[in-house]
Image (cartoon, rainbow, N blue to C red; front, side):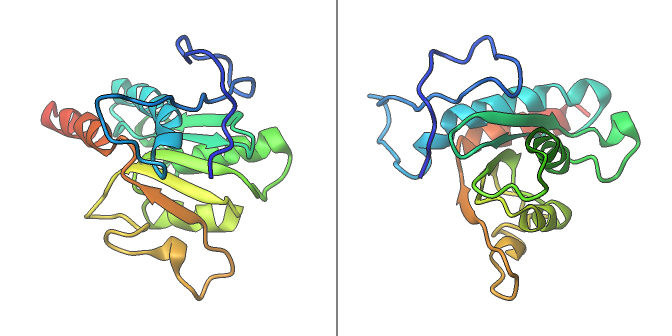
Length: 184
């Protein structure tokens, strides 16, 4: 499952490419969830990254790509408005940056953590990059392609199907998006 390396609290966030996501300890207030808990700290990094999108008028979606050992390879947030680029979704940018760091387009063993369920374009990029898994927070019932509207990433006709983990800090991810759209 998660191969995160334990380090002290990630605040402040270290320089990309040099940090690790710590494995969460037990939380006495909630029931442990062995499927989602290992990804909570990485999702917090993605939520922080999403905050950087809103000042430019971009939808606050953030993404983080983790190496197999838990090292953060890249981070990104939506930059469609800022860059005037319809493909500048957080997932695509994070995958591009991770490929640049590794020097490989195949991101075998990597995990993409994103605050919103990937759309069709991003789901296609996930499959093509050969990531091992995609972890997302909020469902996107209007455009999601990892289980809610479509399930492109797990289509048996494709040559690669990443594992999907959904609902990691889902309420926090959804609240961030709702607040953005209410303020518009």
